[in-house]
Length: 418
Figure 1: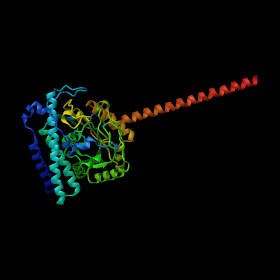
Figure 2: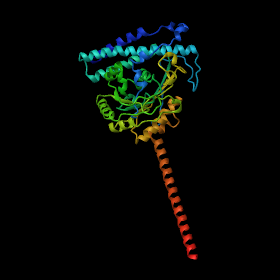
Figure 3: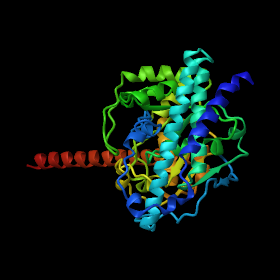
Figure 4: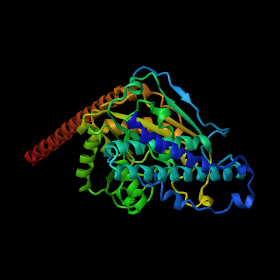
């Protein structure tokens, strides 16, 4: 009980701070000039957990049909997600943007409050560093969860299987997810409890080290124990260039995270995907490498529709945000798997998570992908085609040799006749 007192105190203080920031119901009737004013959120996100999702660099990189449970908490009436364009009125867009910024500000300030308290506990030497990191993560989830309940600017459907063994008794794992918006981290924090349950293991996320240029994010990431990796700055959709020297430190930090009771979260695309409707960006094999070295399974989760609230190509000004939908879907797949190869992991992640990110529904042959039988089938077909191709090349070679021999024999006969 004594060990939980600092954590509970942090959460009570943060909840009070968050409640003071919640806009009242008459916010829907604010003057039009106020709704359309170019409010900047750059100062908000520069001091919030949004930044690791803005330029996250984690791409170092189910058998029978499961009965899924859809949890639609914090739901608000919303239109169906459009595949292109927007069916939302200008008024709805402006209201959504207003409340989204209020949500971000609430979470950011909540983090500031919690980090201050937890930092003070560190100065007073209360609790170990590992325990303080877990307090920071659980408090961040608490803040985001309540902020979304108090400011329901979107509808979130969580699809998970509460009867799955991994839900009731989670094992140490590598977590992977697609990445389509700077809002991803907020939604994942807010819905982590609904998606992974009370027995979930805390996750340390891999992030781009250059984000530490901001003093606040440097404190946030280090205090939460997140794992940095170096790479060259680029825009969403551009090729990643990693600093291979940082991999050794990355692997060491990941190993320590497992020993301390954490899981590790990786974004295999390595950056924001500006076109999730076309599928995933090229998938990196870092998650597979880490899973193979640590002998742990990889568990997948997927997001859909977050980019319709804040697209990767949108700016930091509210006026630059083009809201085209308010319906988000999240999917947690029943259990993890130890993949046979990096190609197995890349193909499965691209097919399963890419399909959900694109359509918001499970791929038709989901069970076969999750248990690995689909990949084995593809491998067998590939080997069969390769063998057939090799056989065809062998026969073509024999035919070419026979034609050449016949030509030489014909030439010799002609010479003898002459």
